[in-house]
Length: 313
Length: 319
Image (cartoon, rainbow over all chains, first blue to last red; front, top):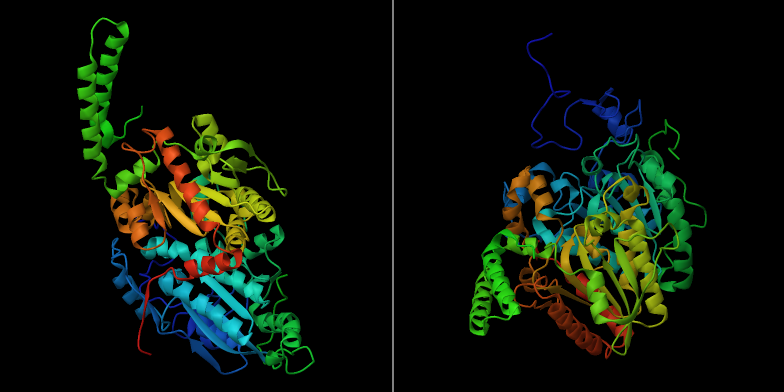
């Protein structure tokens, strides 16, 4: 018996300024503990080469994976304000400042447009390092404007969710973003424009209970946590251990809430395939959008890193 | 009567009144003046207490064990109400009730969360915390309302959606999301009333409408003060502070233009005079139904999306 006992596993370091992918040459996989070089990890699209664990990445990484090349960001000038003068242990402005030190993103979601396998597409991607990817007024507004852009330019929409849920510091305003985004998606639906929801680890709370679950097609990354109430809350409520794999992408797929689980290495190809099919009627009916499909062939996958794991589905 | 901590001064006065009335019933002495005097005293005390409620006290009032729930209002407001059951997919969730009825000569569909009035019923109704099938039943009834061009009235009164293995397995998130999506385009008017607690996704899951109102002593926010305290303060002890920080009262919500109006409660709160509350609510609903019936449905749908699209506060910086 030792004199000192370690209660918590692993090294306990302050999480301040922690990036989703830490700087440095060596990176340890959270899934299996395998150590990878940064270079290898980037080449493998931030997946572990041993266990295929999909590490959390930010909007820029997703844009680089999905767009053919150049892309343009939108609505970056919309910023959060502390309308409630919200203060818990820290004030909301302090939390916003801290978020800005942790990531280059201007908010928890970044909207960009560009071409995905030659199809002009709007992609909105979340940044978990910005107050847990939480949904406040700015996220709602950016999604709302992204939808307006999709309707005006007749472009499909992809939202990449990665969020802890509502932003409590905006209280009821945050709650109303669920209604706002869903109502605007109803408009997108009426306009006959495709929307693909792409859920990544983690997708929880008000984000799941609004736009994330409303895709014409819902896809997810393997192993992603997708939930309304997070596992800790559910566990505390029912006071029992949760079944293994509960609330993972695979669990939701089995229960019928996801169309596909797609490996990050294949996601561009799969999205390209789907958009080519879903956008076809749009370009046929609407002459002004004739440029949506530029070639008749099914788009071929772009230069991607080699796939070393079978698709999770 | 159940008295909350801050209502305690009333308890003594009420018991005095009861005693006087007992004496009168015995028929020996005329106590009319004394009773009148005491009643005035009670009114004065009520005004004193209820005119300076803290946010946390309002949260407590919204959960008062004697506060009327959805089915009470339905029974008071409508005639020929028929409760309808089941989501046609999985089962019938008693945490949400709904059905058809007449408010005077106007046929309507009414849906709302229902807490229980005793322990057994509370368990059966899961304290008004609905499972996915509750939200799906609500949507099924709304779709029926659309078909028959009946206005929809929803009563929100929930501490949140159900939390547990089953709720997640059948995706309460998807059920709420789908309700929001479908309510945004439902081709019939929707009136929403927060009659008690309006917590989180569980509340907004039946809360997207053309007009949204709150009863005076209710609250509406993204999370309950207790949960907010536990997450942000990492302790359950800061619920009062959390209630203040969340700005969750009807007055706050009206100030933020998140709701369209407040329905005043009788002196002493809805639980003190449920019948009076139901009368005020009925009057309010009738007026709203009349006003909204003058708007063409196409126009109403545009307004509905615009209404929610406007919600949110942000700034635009120079880029």
